[in-house]
Image (cartoon, rainbow, N blue to C red; front, side, top):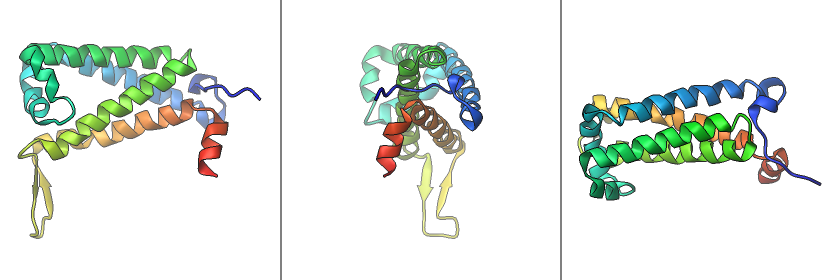
Length: 162
């Protein structure tokens, strides 16, 4: 029995509409990647990088270097996702890298000082504009997770749920 990876573009029924998600994520990663090549973006992400237990090591590249590194990585993910429309393995790799990317950015919600203020008052959790900006990444993480799971062979998904 041959088990192969899948891609939404070759699927049927409701599975095929997942192709829309792929191309939306390609556009998102390209736009995020382009932004990393501006000084304003580089200055804006330094607070997240310096407080992250996962990517604080990027500071060795300096202010612009860490932003360039992330921009190139985001372009790479966009390319893998685009190529994933034709190659199931590239679809799986690109979407998994998207999951990792958004899991790291989602962690900024908890690791960046001042983003969230926890209290026992009537408003138990409050976040500022930075927190609101980061909060949307949970949706993008889920989109990449759906694309990743859709790339897996159905036999793998069925054996995991049994």
